[in-house]
Image (tube, rainbow, N blue to C red):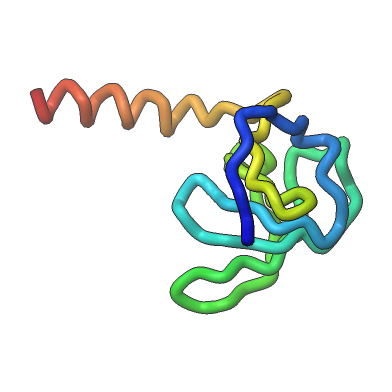
Length: 93
C-alpha cells in the first residue's frame, strides 16, 4: 500500500527506476540517472506507452520507498506556456 507524504524530494535526487507522476496526469518510470539535466529519459504510460525525454519541471510527484512525495528544486519555466495560461484566464473571466 502506498501513502502520501508532505516531505518534498529534490528532482536531482530521483534515480533510475523511480516512478513519477507528471504534470499532465500521466505516470512514468525514469530510465536514466542524468540528474543534472533539465530533461530525463522516461517510459511514459499515457494513452499509448512511449519512451522519450520529459522535462524535469513536469515531474510533480515521485514514488520513493512506497510513499508518494512532492518534488522540489529547480524547474524549467516555459514562458510561452505562462503567457498562454494568463491569456486563457483573462478570456475565461
